[in-house]
Amino acid sequence: MNKDKRILITGAAGFIGSHLCDRFVNEGFQVIGMDNLITGDMKNIEHLFPLPNFQFYHQDVSRYVHVPGELHYILHFASPASPVDYVKWPIQTMKVGSLGTHNCLGLALSKKSRILVASTSEVYGDPLVHPQTEEYWGNVNPVGPRSMYDEAKRFQEAITMAYHNAHKLDTRIVRIFNTYGPRMRLNDGRVLPNFFYQAITGQDITVYGDGSQTRSFCYVSDLVDGIYRLLFSDYAMPVNVGNPDEITISQFAEEIITLTKTDQKVVYKPLPIDDPKQRQPDITKAKSLLGWEPKVHRSEGLKITYEYFKKALGK
Image 1: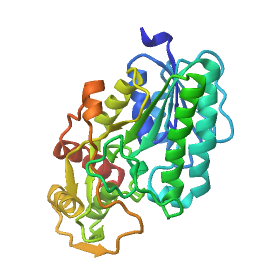
Image 2: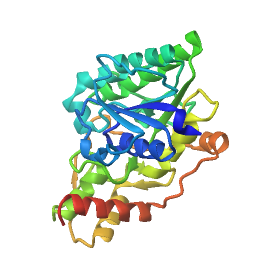
Image 3: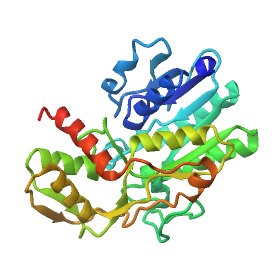
Image 4: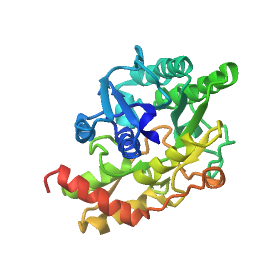
């Protein structure tokens, strides 16, 4: 039974972190959520507070991590994750990926815990290989406007593997591709909430670049299931988890307009520096090692997310 298993989830009040809390609470684990609330929102986890198997620590993992008692698993998901956030908080982003990861790895070592760290498709940068496999080393600008996030995550992977190799620590690394669903922030700067916000509020839809760049959107419940399976696998190298159903940004804008039944124009603006032109995960490893692949079709996931955003905006 899981009721005797304790798990720490950092970044617990964030979009993905809060859904992970839900999953592990529902699976019967004793869940300790931790967040400094720079970008997290207590509303995402307030429904868990009355439950006997959930605790919350308001704590910054970049400073220190202390959890009394036994600890069996750690999920390290603390980090700003959108361009708006990590440009606003560049040093904090670097610190949580480096010092925060170091602190979590040290905690895992002292508690003899298994730790899974949240990496990202951004470690591939603006990729020269398509789709992206885990063996691709990436094309990343170490001093560019996105470098605080990209390089923090690349360092996070490196130090995690160093602990795995030097200390025989039980580690897992998930590389997360574009994920969406309820609890995303409307103002977080990513394409999906931007498009929904603009459509719902009657603004023109803004596409950066010529719209030919691609993304692959994974619904959050699928992502959480992939992470859950990876945690309990015996594979220590990075694994892509995402939906390989690739779409151009222009096509995606039209999908949003059709779904929301709005008649907004699509307005094109210059592409930000180092913005990736292509994003599509190769999920061969996830399929073979974890028996995982996404189940929620984009049309279904977008409807659920649209209803969430409408409610959030009082529409």
